[in-house]
Length: 315
Image 1: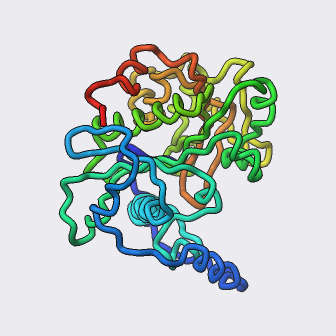
Image 2: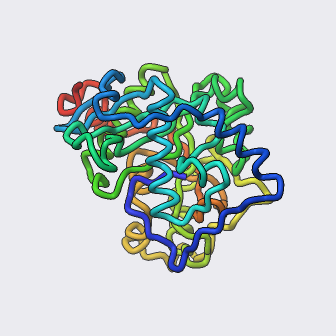
């Protein structure tokens, strides 16, 4: 689930906490694992490594658990408070979007140094992205995207490459503009260079779970952006949703592009491919598509714009 663009809230959404009979046996240990949450002021974030800066905004790599918790709080505000995700017991009680991958991933955070250290804005974190390197994923059960897509063939076909999974991206509504997105991409590219990443993968989302209502953009992706055979990935059979819902001749390209979420549109612009088949994510209320982005296919002008040498992003 990734959102760096303004989502559309599902009409009539009401929260229903999904407490199973044995739910509390799972909640208590999980909350203990994330205990010790502190209210962290803006100043406490300033000891993090700064990767880039635009005016008052900075992109940093979180190095402390308490700052990962701030990213989780931000994700909760966007995915659950603003959008139509249904929290599990752990998320509901902690008001944080939590899953087991958080403990093994690296977390990019965007902070606004101009925010006052009071009220709800005291946390200072206005955007985040979660990064998972292949070497780490392999040691902890695999990539998150493997729950929805069969990526084993992709990894085996490119055994000598280093993969990075991108996910859980979100930005507060007031910061969903070009400068924040540029900082996030700058942080990602700095990380890619540092760890010598060869390809990026992940899932990007459409708001809503009715594929018929998304027929135009899904069909556009199927006809114009599906990965070549060497980079092909397919949704798992039990979760596969057909993307080819309209004939290519019926698609108005301009209208279809406008129907794409800005995040997906951004991925396509830098050279990304789309996997075969969409997947419905009931928990988050989204329709997901697989994104594959070989570093070698990224347009050079984007590297020059977002890369570490870009002066306007210099820390």
